[in-house]
Image (cartoon, rainbow, N blue to C red; front, side):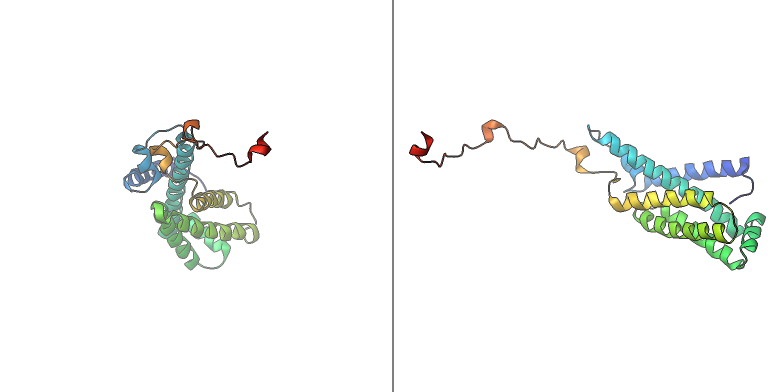
Length: 195
């Protein structure tokens, strides 16, 4: 992505993460919004850890793709050289930058994260193949982003990482009934069979 990551890029990434965090906490339906207003129960702690990990992964991916997509759109020299080495033309740089920035913006909206993660995962599959077969170098960054997007898409599709459920608000009743509520079943055997 970048030839050298400097202090400026790290500070910009931290500023983007803080901004995206503040935006995400105000959006109803997000895990960070629900976490601030959560109800505690015995079984909720593990689920909340999964929700927060998912939300953090989405925000980090959004920040990274805003930076990288923005670098492609503004024409950083290392991005121009990368797409010149690919050999297709600079139109692919603009298209990739638009898809990355749009996907990053959609990752912030909780209802659209699954679709955005699938879109960006497809882009990372293409980037992995280009790095392997065209640029002849190991695709570590593309595979890392692909792993993150696959996790986000799986978590949102499976529904196990939903921020709120009835388990937080209502403690479930035991499944077995107390003995005093159980009805006695009449013994249907005849008197002779009982003896």
